[in-house]
Amino acid sequence: MQKSIIISGPPAIGKTTVAKGLAQEFGMKNLSGGDVLKEMAQEKGFQTKGDDWWDTDEGMKFLSQRKDNYEFDKKVDEKLKEIFQKGGAVITSYTLPWLVSGGIKIWLGGSRQNSAKRMQARDNMELSNALDIVKKRYEENRALYKKLYGFDFGEDLSVFDIIINTDGLDANAVLDTAIQKVRDLS
Figure 1 (tube, rainbow, N blue to C red):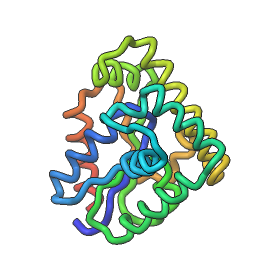
Figure 2 (cartoon, helix red, strand yellow):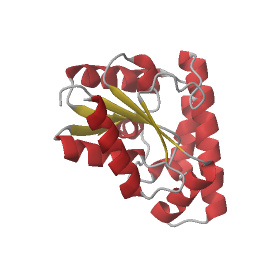
Figure 3 (cartoon, one colour):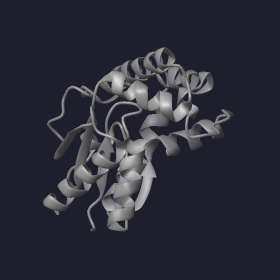
Figure 4 (spheres, one colour):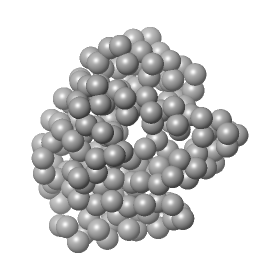
């Protein structure tokens, strides 16, 4: 498969799991916009260890700083656009689906409760804490992308080729659904 695949959706909905599975299934490379952003945060002195860094106090602090400085997000998006255009990549990104044409764009949706349960299991935290983090990250990102690019993250899904509601599905079922739908579009 030559064209790239982009996976987007709210925090802790399963984007990384689906991206890794699709990359393996179709022999593509996997890249996360969040990982590129974490590299930039590290360059600015943040300690970004661990997959759950975004959910830590330091990750939330970096998220708050991004509201006043768009350079991080714009640089990440430019790098992701270049990779996307080359093809052969599965990319997780909040913004890329609205910024490029072509490829296959997948939205993973679901309730905040569903995201919080995934975060709770993944990061071994209280459900109420996970719910607070999911809500804050979603709202902060939504406001940031509206201000930065003018689109309604999570509201305007017209750019997506595939929309999967993850509520009531385990990770394998979501991945199997994504694989089949990508095959149908290829």
